[in-house]
Length: 231
Ligand SMILES: [Zn+2]
Image (tube, rainbow, N blue to C red; front, side, top):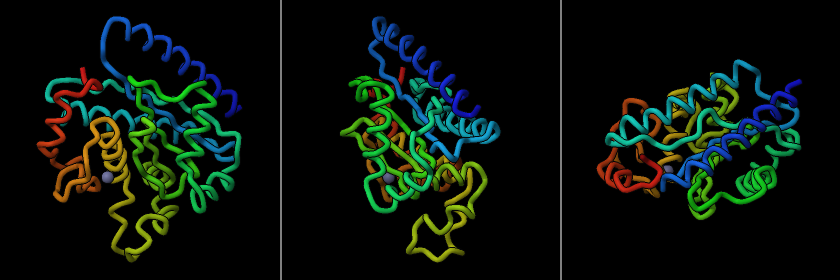
């Protein structure tokens, strides 16, 4: 039943793709697409799905409000939920020992039938992705794994030992709250969309864990002012 439901949403994704391609004939704007991937044996419940959709929208709306300077981030909403052909253990093992970003990108390329277009960026949440959180602008792709997902879903105990292994447990609960990891998602989106660098300050590119009460660096505002991903 869960799988059939995932495929139903996948169909909506295909419709959205047609709509955006049509829109490109009229506007030069580019679009950020979001995907949420679940291993075949660890599907998201209806409640979890709603939480992840809500947090994606919160992040996107925050970027529009705080970064857009009157322009809107062109982001697909809600994300497209897909089921991976592999088990949680299989995906998590890749996260621990291999290149989980490459695995996820390959899965999406097979699903979509191509790599991201020049006018398109893919942001992906992957259950089984472990502690991975990174942006790969050369591949037009960013991904976050279990730390982001389980923190957003209110399961910090599931990931407290994955995040920042070098930091003592008692000092890092603040990094695995729903807000902190929504900040991590926003941070990776800004890396990908604006090519914004990490910055040593209290802004979103330095202190994402303080989201939503975090400053936006002047450089980020400046990069957004000329970005084709805002309209
Ligand atoms: Zn960063």
